[in-house]
Length: 284
Image (cartoon, rainbow, N blue to C red; front, side, top):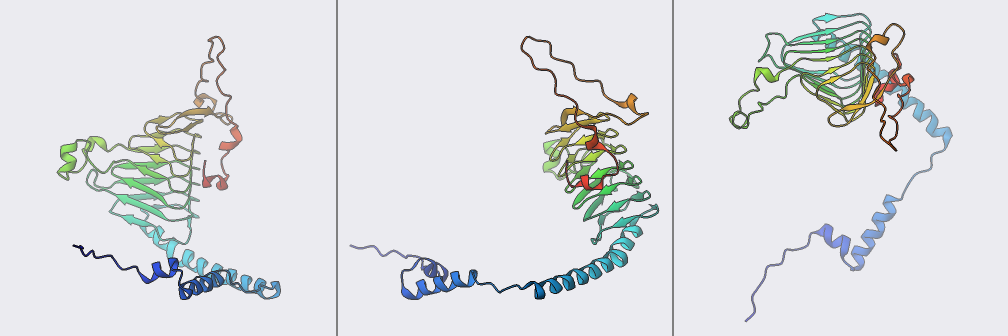
């Protein structure tokens, strides 16, 4: 006795991709020919075409920046410095809080700010003068986040003074808000450079002139004029402070004295932390 089985019917796409039938083979050849088809591009034609495109793009982007993104960003600010500029994206700001922006701040891409008024009547975000914030940065403010002057935030940086959920599993399962003790202000001091996709957790302090390498997780205090990397971020180098700031330099790591031990790695090049190099905001 034979048992009937229902076989699923192959889709037309599967048949065309696998069938040896002449029609399917012809369709595959036609598809390959279309994928490889291209038009000639004589420079006499394509160069003016490119110039036209670039000119129109500059006009559109300039309009978006001057008449949409910058005015709306400035409207969010409770204190606004001079010469504040943005890119073409309107910031995504949720909740109510104080946004204080110093002179010469530049936000070059998408910026997301979430104010959580559960822990403070007016959560506060302070951005110091001359700070540069790159594309796709996210800041969560439950109480206070302070970003100093001349700070470079590379793309994809996330700063949180609240984890968003309670540490206790039972409270988290019940959907309770985080404990107020878990909401801890964050401070990034002057001239620090935060690399791409860094996560800065509640209660962290990033010292003056320091560098946080890309993809690091900061959960504590970074000493001034040091380089940190990893998860959790740990010191991997030191920097030479500018004149008058030598008292902030951390002590050099101790030299290993055991037989056959290698000396501690030399300090990193201080030029990597030189302020005013906005191109460094692309990553550490």
